[in-house]
Length: 158
Image (cartoon, rainbow, N blue to C red; front, top):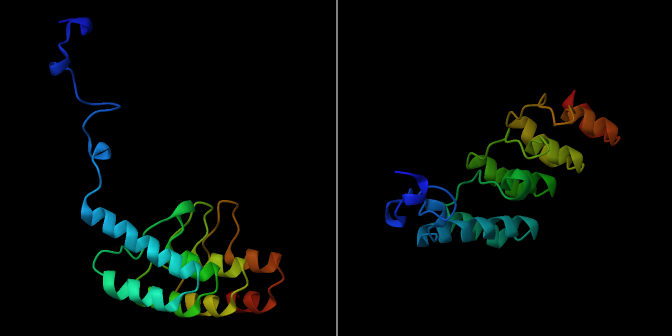
């Protein structure tokens, strides 16, 4: 049988436009998960501790604490980058990955260092964050701290 003689109902169903999972509408459970994860990230960005705690407590069974948003930023990356000490601690207690790597190769520790958030750096180090991880440019957390003249952070990382 030549390609031209394939009857449409017998044509392979693979490829663009086929009935694959990617073409299915999301389930109610998937929609609820995404909504909860967006609420969590919004709470971190807005420094809304009440909403953060409410979202974590009411959706703990569906939220992947290590989900990635734009740029492969996890909630812990975002909390550390914005100096949200209590939120970062809560995420770590819930087993957030201290060594997750975003799209530029930064760990949550590096996100905190890059923005000069000393308390977040202390928390990450206390919890065992990898100090020797390197960004895609080959920089460590110590290199970042030194380039920004964050003397206290440099001393913590030595």
